[in-house]
Amino acid sequence: MARTPKKRIKRSNKDVVVELLPHQLEFVQHTDSKYLALIGGYGCGKTYAFCVKAINLAQLNPNTNALLAEPTNAMVRMILVPAFEEALDRLNIEYELTTTPFPEFTLYFNEGPVKILCVSAENYTRIVGYEASFIGIDEADTIDHEVAHAMWKKFIGRLRGKGKVKQLFIATTPEGFKFAYDTFGTDKAKQDERKHMIKAKTTDNPNIDPEYIEDMLKDYTPEEARAYIDGEFVNLRSGQVYTGFDRELNDCGVTIDTYPGAVLHIGLDFNINHMSAVVHVIMDGKVYAVEEITNLRDTAQMIDVILNKYEGRVVSIYPDSSGTQERSNASESDIAQLKQHFPRVLFHKKNPRIYDRVTAMNQMFCNSRDLRRYYVNVSKCPTYTENLEKQAYKNGLPEKRNDVDHLIDAAGYFISFKYPVKGKPKVRIQ
Image (cartoon, rainbow, N blue to C red):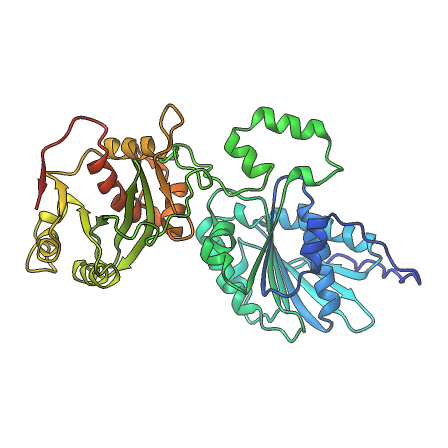
């Protein structure tokens, strides 16, 4: 049964004062980007900002419909509806609320009403034929990764109302490298002019009890503290593989042109439609990853790219040793193709153990004496950088989910060949 509509509240002649923290105010007022995110730690005021954001957009889009979403039906009724009612009451906004089949608010403004339907990730597929001027998703990172991406695409299709300010926004605490990171945190996403991300920390809220923060610091791991207090994207999954790598400490400004006469050392991984390579230079005992090559079709295309891109440079190739095997899509082995074009193709008789390759990489990134000998130009190798941060162990082995392994493996063949953990293995130089 529908809830009795709440009595309409008459507007005061006086303006209502809205007190917002700087990150909340930026989030509420930012309307230049089609896609907007507030990523913050626990207690930084995301939920209230989320509600005020929706009210502000409603005022800008009279006589339209809108959507607000939570991960579950329970969260819609226990978190979103009470929080939204509280925000409306604080702002003295006239409204009605019905609760079946989904909670729906009707906000009344002088320019016209706005209906806001409240849904969950559990039933977003039931939203058919609904045109929204704006859509908000609260705590998006707690939604199943695949469901979140599917819902995002569905909501993009719903964002076609007649409002003046169309916007799809989220507010969430980061849960590792999940939906929020994929959509707003990657280097590619940051370069998308349609997107804007606002970051906030728990400590940005002066109303938070210091004891609350102190308790979190005592109970959380360093990674959890960075995520849940600082609002940072970190690997929260147990067993991160490349623990020696740090995006800031291992970053460098070295490029392909910094040392024009230096040999290019190219680690290469064979994968149909995912041919990958990481280009390095070595100088003064340090190794620098300066460029990445990703998602090429096959070995032949990789050869063409290297020959054209690095014409005139001395090149050494360090391929996956399994490339000696005949491939069904080629008349000769991958390594045989490489040997036809490059005088130095260096590889082990067989690939080193995965453990040894990982250990070699980590020791180069940062050894037990805190010495860093392997650096990555983060801006030139964005995918390689992200993969190093994201890859975790699964069933005792580095995971291969979402193709995080190709560039890492490519670099690993070079590093483990040039800087092996154990004694020199028998190798071929052809």
